[in-house]
Length: 134
Image (cartoon, rainbow, N blue to C red):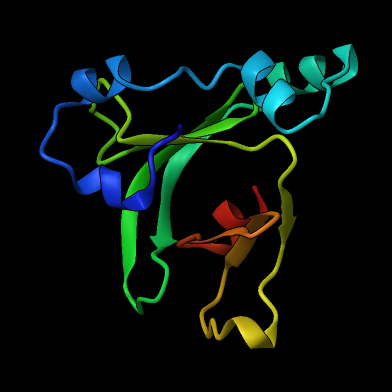
């Protein structure tokens, strides 16, 4: 199972966590989410790798956590800083939709986007319009 938000505060080291859960390989995620990835998708993915700081909103909390985020190979990897060697957690994005929050979400901030797959919902906030558009 992939790590939950609560696991990112665990006292175990990153190496420990990596050895105790399945890898989030593209093939594993495709099988689990009953989806496929075309060669065209792979080509576009190679050309669209991003990294930078984003703020992540925790469920049932008004707070935002600033994380260094790397988007590569259909997955977001979360780090405390850009200098970290190992991610705190990862989020495979296959099957997720990207949208802006709606009024019912209760988010009153600029540059926020929503990632959703079934009942899994994440909110991220960029610190500038430029970063939000990227």
